Image 1 (tube, one colour):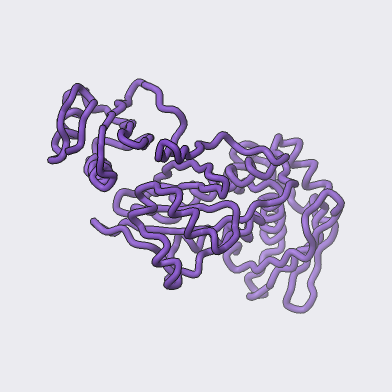
Image 2 (cartoon, one colour):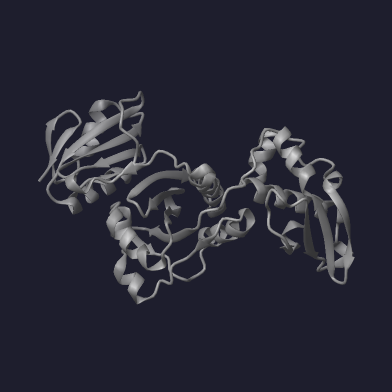
Amino acid sequence: MLARLFLILTCLLSTSVTALEYRVDVGEPSLFDVENSIENVIIGAAEKMTGVPQSQMMGQAPDLFSLSEALVNSYGYDGNFFIVDIDVIGLKTRLETAGIDLWESERPEFLIWATEERGLERLMIGQEPNRIVERLMAASGRFGVPMRRPLMDLEDTLALSPAEIWGEFAGAVNNASSRYGIEHVLVIGDRPERQSMKYWFFESNGEFRSGEVSGADADGRSDKLISVVMQYARSISDNGRKIPAVVARPAESSVLFQPQIQDVTGQWAVRVEYTDVIRLMELIDHIEASESVTIHATEIRANDATIVLKTDLSLGVTDQLVSDFSAVQFISPLVYSLK
């Protein structure tokens, strides 16, 4: 039923609003379920008030949306529309009682660049249909967080390439994004064959961070990414506070995209000296190609890099995996030089 509902929010959420009116396109009157429609409207309003997906809210409070009709001032029909007038104060009270914080600060806007790994190629996603991008754009309306796609015209195509995205070149991303005047930039790199997706958040002031989500299909990866995006968006809007981010240091020509690396059980920190950043990217691709290893974090500096690997492999086997790359010269265990 939810897929057939068309909801129109007729007033903005704010602390001064005590009622909200939703208009639901009935579509198929013979199949219309009033009780289910009311619950869906309440869930949609709650997601927009909090920026938290339904599944996450119900994981914290399983009975959150029970007796949803108690949160409705009135409902009825107007032609082909079913109108629901929500008791905003009652809904806010229920959310707060469940320990779910409201999101009442201004929502930040995001520009979304997308790439996809197809076999050995990494390609930019343009205006063609793409499930993950489409779900992100749907989440924009669902949670009230503005999102915009680049035009992907000739200027965009020349300004940013997949190699620059996957190489974590923050300057290239920010330069390509500057024409849109949007402060926050989300970049995604989907890898369907590996059932994983990398993401990067870039800020106009030079701060950025990244991570990775996994999922058997595009919907699964999208759901996890949307949750991450909402958490990030809220963190940078609430009271003007920003989450700790990594700052690029131009003087050292460095690109940091994870917190300070520490030695952790189940991880190996590989250190590599290099002179050619392209060779370094090729080494990273070589490591990522192994099904036994996951890259947990990477820190790239002017002349050397640290790559943190999550793996159950022994030190010797991990060393052999890295050494199998033809350009690698062994210095000491987990320390190498690129020719």
